[in-house]
View 1 (cartoon, rainbow, N blue to C red):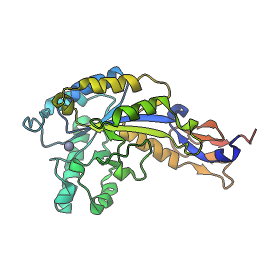
View 2: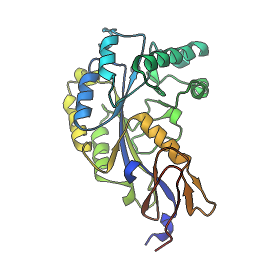
View 3: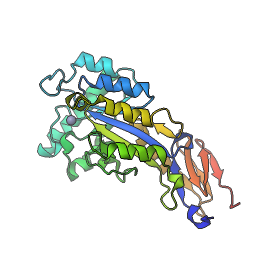
View 4: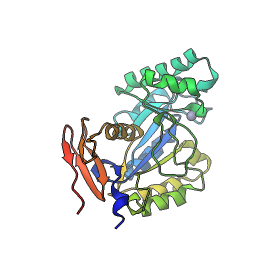
Length: 285
Ligand SMILES: [Zn+2]
């Protein structure tokens, strides 16, 4: 059945899963602590985009001071990522100043937290073609926009990573329900993996008095074997490893040159390809 539809190869996430969920929250505000507690309780992972020269700026959504920021994010499974040193529009300052915003932000976060920081969210969604060109040269592997796709598709360009939706959008719950109930392997033609990407600012839950909303979404989507819970950079790096797979011309053999195992689906079967391993796909049954 549908034999001809299953010759295509589809990326599958770690463990052979076909769905991944990630969160992205901006500005390093005090309410992040409560959000992290909720994410941790549900086994979920997220990315927190931090400025490095606005600590303790309480009149701007109650930002954490330097010490609070360190204690909140040090040694956690969540990712910390760039949001510019001073939260300026990168497309509204001279290019050298924009570069300095990213470089200073990255140096601070890497040295303070002892990590390698390669992700970013554009402050005010401010970017242009010049910024897109410069990011790879600064070691930035992805950058999130604020443009909702209301879909579960992987990004075409990780430097313009459009999220599924902001948590205040009315589409959030219907999308979460669809994500929980469905799966790409039930699709006839489009069997690409599903990524649900939710973003926002944790202070909005205080402002709108609706922490229950994120609790409900986490209840619905957490604790499931069929979803990979990952930070933004984990998804970016996994997709890169998948993209490095080398196939024979007839498409029947695949070699994985990366240091991590990679999964793919062909003809309805999921294969795990270990690092430095070559796998031959089963012929049609
Ligand atoms: Zn921001």
